[in-house]
Amino acid sequence: MRKSYLIFILLGSAFLLILSSCANEKKSEAKGSNTKVVQKGKEVSSKVIFENDYAVVLKVSLNSGDFQAAHKGSNRVIYSLSDYSIDWEEHGKKLGDKLWKKGDVHFHEAEKHSSRNNGTTKAEWLVFSKKNQDLPDYSENAIEHDVHSVSSSFVNVLLDNADFKITEVTLPKGGSVPMHSGINRIIYSLSDYQIMYESNSMSKGEKQFKSGDIHWHEASQHALQNNGETVAKYLVVSYKQNDK
Image (cartoon, rainbow, N blue to C red; front, top):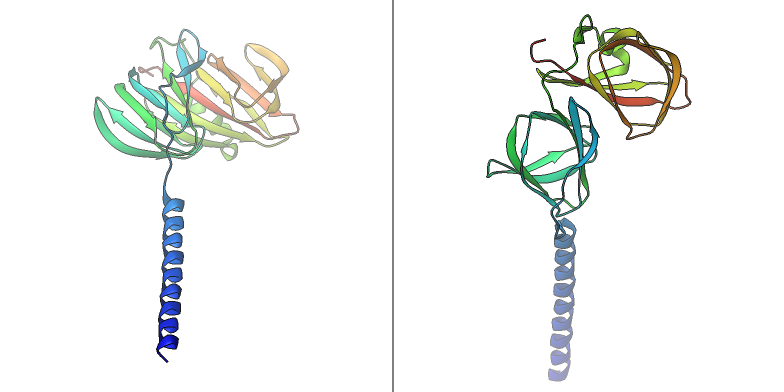
């Protein structure tokens, strides 16, 4: 009887040890699944992807853990190319996590700042800023008569302030935009597409663009039609004169 009792005790203890081990493994798995593993990164500089006498556009690409050291920035618009999380600092003051989604747009006033990718995926964004307040005159062209005024069903205004107006255009196959005003602006392609384009300074002609292409237009009256096989999606980044 005593021998059987000892065997029973030993079997019970073993069973309890197995249960405890399984529970600890599950806790470890759960903890591991919620742990954000941020890589040890390096300092990264912005890349100039467009520049002329009036504007400059930068692209920032930070892998997990990468950072930008403190640097000056002018009034600027940020367009997110990916979902990301960063640690943000202005004038030496830590402002905590900033979370952005692909396609988000926001404005920053001039200040000294730094950032670090504290997420596990690549953080990518564009920086649009002015180089010179003396933009080419846009005379009779007015921001109130831009693409939104003639084709509101194809456009989404992402930001509109004293310095910039950011408009996202999604033009379906066969869609067209009638003649309208455009002030000094940058076009950034969000897809591959083909259009027929004409303006008061350019006869009608075919143009093809790839995702990531970027170009500048001075103020003009213009019209276009998507004559390609894909949706034409692009950003119109309009640069305003402060006295307009």
